[in-house]
Length: 161
Image (cartoon, rainbow, N blue to C red; front, side):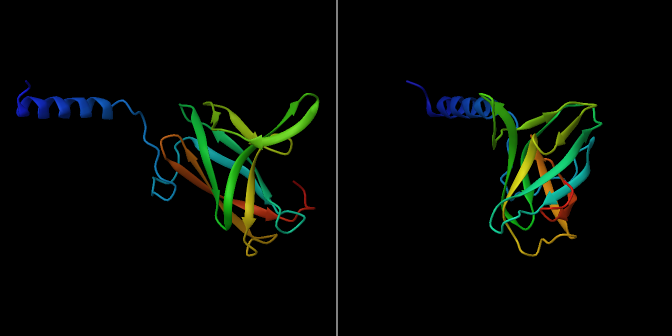
């Protein structure tokens, strides 16, 4: 029979061992994280409003990684929108299709382009306060929970993408 003190010590050691196996913890969506991701910069950001009210808008931009390690973008949020999803356009069986993607990794020294016909952010239920000529605040969350925010120029559906 195991004495109670030994059982408690064994339970504590096992719990500590299991807790260290988890890897990086993802922060909850609303949790505060340090703002800015070393080495990441965003260029040419724009949010294209939908042609038909109620349809989703689209965010395009260039994600530049001048840092020393790869960065995986796990989440995107646009202030003034109910939901934002990372999507990719791809060819399947000779036809173009689009769908939500998982994390997107940009390697050191590379630029990942979110553009028409490729990666992009779909922005759902956009606030009427986001109008052509205004700015939208976009936040990217990378693996590990660090966040970087940037302003995207809001453009009308017929404007240059």
